[in-house]
Length: 411
Image (cartoon, rainbow, N blue to C red; front, side, top):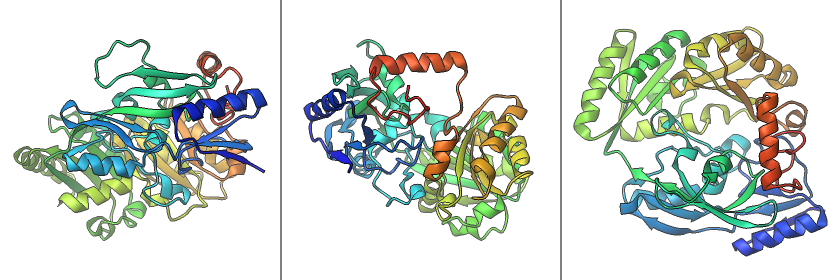
């Protein structure tokens, strides 16, 4: 029988970790469980759930900073920011539906703990770049604080950067402070139809390098575009390359016109305004195209854009797959046929190795047996693995926090 803890205060989190240390029982750390499917299967008998650590404890719009308890739903934070025409600029995705969970259940602690960023990452940076401060409990059962409420602070080591993307293996986040920014006055997306993958990546690269400052660039091959919630995209009967611009009205109108000229030389073009634009990018960021087939393993490939189409071509040559590109080709979302041997791990990582330009692949969705059998995260080099083990030993010497979530030994 499993043991579940739902603390409501930092001191209670300390007590739970202290119990785990004394009892020798490791803890699975979750918020609302919407991202429990990311990472290796842990199968622990005790769970520490942070879903009752809720509420925005500090928000000063003029200071562009917000502090919230780790279990606060992302939807609540975004609604509060919208009241003041502000946003989390890194555009955090809601991956709950990808794992069969209801939309709107993602917590801010889970977003930061997994370092999840959406399409605007190409312009605004990753979640960790907006992570200003934290209250957390280490695997030693000690409450600690790091950072503050301003971008420039000198309070010691920047532990926020270490904890972002640690998947609860180093500490239990209880409060997070994030930088917020003004929401754009106007948003539009220029669409180009019918480009093949290689041409689309080149076009996105040219747009990204231009002075037009796009805030998102993605390409959907025809099979993916057909499933879009936006009719202009779904009914195009062709691949769709999408480039978004944001800002003041006159600036957006000018840049859209320049983008139409740039892309119009290559393909027919269309333009999406407010609601449709928001719907399109929400689907792209939330991996909406792969929600409907939960049996398919889903991979997230971070690659140099120049190698993106060649990597996908190699994968497509040996297994059944669907894919689309985000971050101007730097991010590939790939869903493989459920019958593919080892969930496509050998094929995907082999293609990365053959490209010889670096990059890494993460198995984002797979059944428990698959995630226990193959490396979910890109295997680290020996020096980097040793450094990670030493870091784990400093934060969690007895390995009580999410052991095995990221690597076999839980270190």
